[in-house]
Image 1 (cartoon, rainbow, N blue to C red):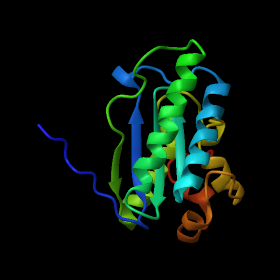
Image 2: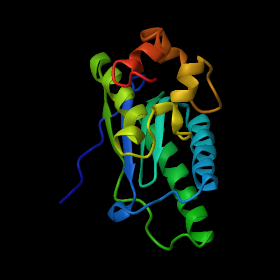
Image 3: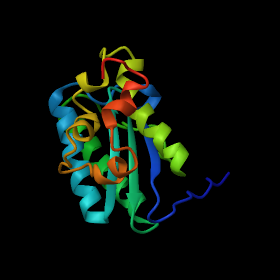
Length: 176
C-alpha cells in the first residue's frame, strides 16, 4: 500500500514529531542532545527551515518548523536524522534503525499553534522528568522566556503572538 503524501504549506508552521524505533530511547547523554541540536540547526539553515519551538525528550522530538519550500522540511529532517543515526550508531549507543518510520508533520492554524507550543514546552513536566518547564535544558522554553533567539530557535514569531511568555506558561504552571 503506498504511503500517503505529506502535506506541506510553505511559510506555515508545522508540528513535527519523530519517535525512536519501538519507542526506544534516542538520547542518553547531554552530548547526544547537543549533537542532535547541532545537526538540526545546520540542516534547518541549509534548507531554509525556521524553528519556532522544540523539545527533545529521551525517546522522541517535538518541533515547530516553518519551511520556505515544500521539499525543505523533508530534506532538513532527513539530513539531520540520518547524521544523528550515524553518530548514535558509531558511539556504541545502538546499531541499526534509530527512528520509527517517517517523521509526522501537520500544518497548523493560529489556535493550534498556540496550544502545540505550550504542549511542546510542557512535555517534560507531563512526563515527570522535571517539576517546571524551564528546568528541562533541551527545549525552546529558555529562549522564549529570555526573549532571545539562539542558533536554532527564532523567538520573534511566537513572542509577537504571545508577548508575555511567562504568563502564557503560568496558565498551566503557576511556578513558571
